[in-house]
Length: 409
Length: 91
Image 1: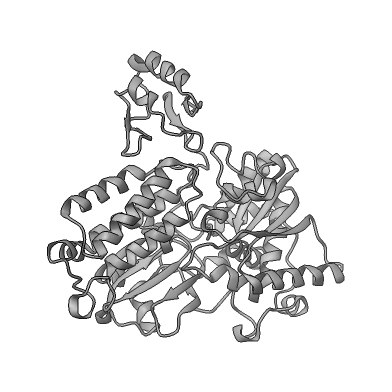
Image 2: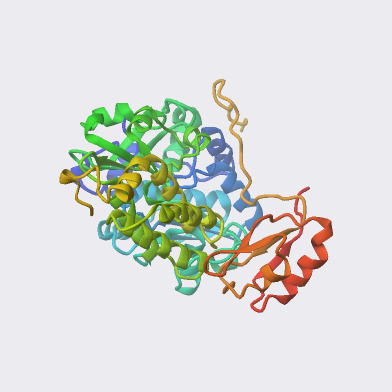
């Protein structure tokens, strides 16, 4: 597929300056109200993880905002397996800015907050430089733009946490309702939109919805940035949505025989057996119907030489450590699940522990202010199913069938 | 400007709501406020269980009419005001 977000200068050449951006794409037309119809017709879905229809979200904020709403461009990207947002912000900052300003125009926002993860140094520098370029060239700015550095925590990018941090310097999720589109920054209806989503908007505003739909091999149109791990050259790639994961794996040089399982959707996602993974369609709508989260497009090929139980235990330890520590079920549930997984991985557990683990996971769903526990529960359920034989072996034989020599983690 | 076309023969996308709708009064817990005192499960065991750490699990969020009085009492008894009843918002 022809790259869209990554069209232009080679990625190794770094951040695209404003002059080059404008020479290549021309100025975007201002964010007219019709843009929201174009977005709805484009079928663009949010790329932050929830895959919510973008046109619908903008219309809701525009209606509620009465000309005084806010836009938060979310570039927190706390997911450890994702690097696509920071890469995009670093290399194509003006696409993100275009999208954010178009959003401000369309939904009637007086202020745009660029919310960028503290650890994403190249992205921060590129956006700051891009803002300076626009000010210096007297580029039309329909709204104030403010760069806010997000704390380096997994849940800081959750939308209510992001709004909370901008308002009160506290990046913990808040109870909903109200959701940000009802009451967000400065108490105003707020459009929280992932930065990759906004970059696609910048292109759709120029080339239209029919152009956008020319890419896409299944139900969800367009291209997407994905972050790939466990391949010869890990990193961020632009793919056509609806592609078969097995075809992508082949193009990335991964062999099915050397793969134990594949984690799709990042730490919020699910393990797929290598068979299921190779035939999977990388498409948010298709995957949702199959009960799999597309998430933010992070993919990890777990090598056949690695242990799925131990890998899941490490992820769950991270998820437990990243709880905002506000909701009891998340605080105690995730820590207990993590400890239990660690003892199973170490060959120190019984079948009772696995049954209890399964119950704890089921009980977690829907019991946090945010979806952090739900994400962990989904990952756990997929591990118990995909690695069922490995869990069994760790308990029955107190040994790991995956790693050389059967030594437990 | 004419409304843009909806694509070429693709099925119309199902558009979810930003906020879910429901048709009967429902029990809800503010998970941040809740600190697991457990009174709600004592007063309303028909709808509420406790997990291994004493935090409520709403088994059934829709409140049947026969339990509305008890549900209101459980809400009023929560020492940290974490339990609430959400009224129907469906059109």
